[in-house]
Image (tube, rainbow, N blue to C red; front, side, top):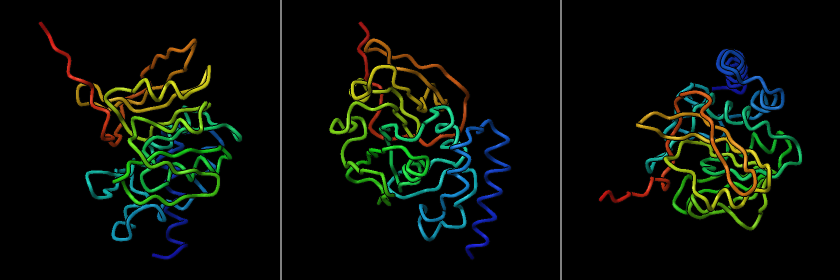
Length: 211
């Protein structure tokens, strides 16, 4: 495919997938219209770059659909200069979008996770996703580019007061976009909408014994 083909596909993604599905934050729309998603998918799956489906990356991982990432970014309302903790960097697409917006990004990916392309303004931290990256704390925004069964306290502890959270949550096999804030050391999440999101490993809810 040519650069022209990809540019047309990217424009179609913005108009038919994002604008029609409540992705209306101007900074997010502008970033997703500029960042070439095809550079963040495996070469053998480049034709899938702009399809609104997860893109398999191997090893049980996948790149979130464009709509899921767009909704997460839009709900988080990230502003230039804000410090963002991104969990689940995968190939680096969401991190590149955040950098395009002007955020200062710390992107966390597992040691055995996908190869990550690093954009300017992004620091990559390799380690367990559920542990985050305390070195850059406190953060203004926590963005989880995928769905988890439970949001670990370790991640919330790395946020500043009144920091915003956008994540996917797995509930009874359904993935749901949720948002929240950290207030007085605690946080709560509110469901926004059910939507297809990739499930990130390492966030299983601990088993609880019942007597």
